[in-house]
Each structure stands twice: as structure tokens, then as C-alpha cells.
Length: 454
Image (tube, rainbow, N blue to C red; front, side, top):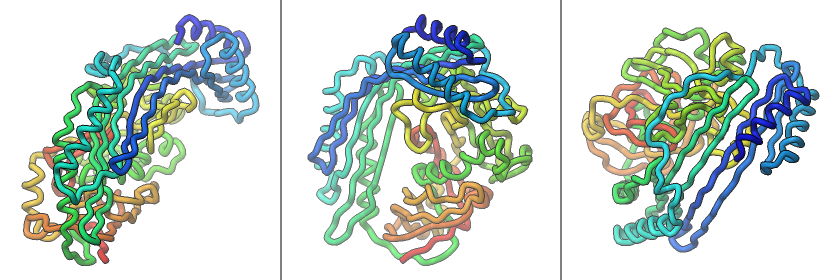
């Protein structure tokens, strides 16, 4: 990525007729491996770079991108973006691209070991996981073992004077297994860890997935009822993604479809719930000096002690609604990170989402449940009704709790309810937290959840 070329392109974009122009360029170098069914390794090496070019002309937005860093390629992409702007409908509430600002320094986003990591080290991590699982128990069958690492750098510049760079490294490990005993088959039990530093700990990951698998093989009995359900961070992250997180975005606010419009300052959840979006989180997967529009990353409280404090905005939705960007103009895909962010326009999306930990250990919360359940993972969260909050999902798996002890799992169970109502029925939040991709979440106990069993 050539900064001189980027500056040249901005000047030329204005010369060729754009009122404003923004260039988002990125370079990625990554390596990954996935071993399927314990025997079929699939490796991938990705080196990719590109530049997304957004132009504004008469309040019309045009976009194009190029993967070649030459003047000829940039000229072609800029003129394509100007042409597409001419054919677009004006955004009457468009104000302007962001202006320069002071940027925070965020710690521990780059590890030099990961920048120069030998792919053999990733291969060795994967082999070690498979070896550890094989020694655990014959009933534990590896389905998908994956690991990878990478380095990325972005440059964001625009015609209003913004010029900022972000760098980050990443390493991740995923362990998916199935428990098999006679005719019994568990759903896939999955554990995951990731970091911007080379500090992944494999042993506890394998221990956890093994314990969860063997416990899921034990069957228990339940009944159709409204009961207390303790949500594992994996399960809660999925419901959050397809309900609450979307309706707190500037897009839902601007379109007037968020159920929380005009509810700032009101209690919308249990007083023990605090939800934070923090783009300055140390070692955060979506942390940086700036978002993907060049607006400084920020830490903002969305819900505090159950009270709605605010929403998150990108540059356009913030200014269009009389607010300001909260540093959430991002180009990744919330339901799966994009490997070519330069091909996407920014939109309001969460950075690192954090639910503040509670005062009780998980074992203490479980011990207080006389009759209830623990939901480890789920299927079907994408079918939730975002605006209403209604959901009905398959439990994968659901564990039965009797007299403060987990006694086994219930195959084929489902849970349903309304997310926005259930937020008011949170009774316990654990001290323990887990990093689930870009979220840091505790275990959460909720009353009055509909449970349907076979």
C-alpha cells in the first residue's frame, strides 16, 4: 500500500468531479488449517490487498474498488465510483465524510511473533489438539479442528484530511467434536479461543470440550415448562447478534424501526445488566485507533444497570440523526468476518461487545437452581424476529439442572421467548467470562424461558 498513491488518488478524485472522496485500503497476510473428521487437513494461505473508493457528488454515493495499486487501476476505480454516484439517488440527509481527530493508543494489538509466524507452528498446534483429544476418551470424535494466524494493516484517508493507519495480528483455535456412544450422538460441541497476541492456551480448551461432550452423552428427563435457563456465552452471543445488537444500531434508529427509539434513560433490562461497546479494548479483535471511516474508536455504554444509555452510529447515520459517529463505521460482516473488507461500504456495526461480569461464580449460580436448565449452544438464531425480539431455537445441547446439579442433557429440546422481555428477567450474571469472537460475555441466568422437550 502506497500512501503517496493514495494521496494522489484523492487529489485526482476531486479534480475529476467528486465533491468528497474516501479511500480505504487494506493488506492481509494469513494462514489457516482445518482438519475434518480427524484425518483430512485443509490448509489455506491468503495474501490479499485492495482499496475501496467511496465518492460523494451532489449528495449521491458511488463506490468501487481495486486490487491493484497502480495509478491506472486507481483512475479506473475512481471514475467508476463517480459514474455510479451519478446514477444513484441523492441522500438528502448526507452531511459530510469525517474530519481529522485525535486517536487513542490501544495496547497489545500487534505481536511480532505472529507477523513472522512459521505455518508449521500452526500445524503443530492443530496436531497437538487432535492428539490430546485421542487420549481423552474414545467416545469423543473430532469433527473440525481449526487454527490460524494472520496480520493486517489498513490505511483510511479522505479529502477532508483524515489519514490514519491501523495494524493488528490474530491467532485463533476452534475445536468441534461429537460424542458417540452406542446409538447416541451429541450435537457438535464447540470451543473457541482467539487473541491478538500469541498467548492461546490449548489445554483448557480441550479439557472443556471433553467435559461438555461427556456430560451431553448423559441423558436426562425434562418437561414442557417456563423455567430458569442459564445461557452459556456461546448461546447468548447468538441471540444478541440477531436481536438486541441490531436494534441498537444507528441504521435501525435512522429508519425508525428500533423498539428502543425515544427510550434513552428508561429501564429496558434487569438492573444487573451492563452492556458496553469498546473499540479501545486491549487485545480486542475489533479494536483500533479508528473505525473503518477514520473516526476515533471509543468506549461507550449502551445499557448501564438496566438503563438504556445510547446507540452506536457510523458517520452517516450519526450525522443524519443529529448525533455523531461513535466510531462504529465498520466493514466486516457481523454474521461472519469478511476477508475482503475493501469490497464493502462501512455501516454501523458493534466493535467489541462486553457484558459486565457479575459477583457470583458459575458453580454458585448453578447450585441455586432447583429446577432449570443450562443452554450451551443453539441453532436457528438467525430466524429470530429482530424488531419484535421473538425467537424459537433448537437447543444444541440443553442440560438439565436438578437441585443445584447438572444431571444430563435433553436431546431435541427447544427454547423460545421474547429477547426484549427476557432481558428484564435476568437474575444472575457470572464472574467468569468467555471471549466469543468480538464479544466478551459471562454466563447469564434468566427466568421464565419457554422450554419444550421431546
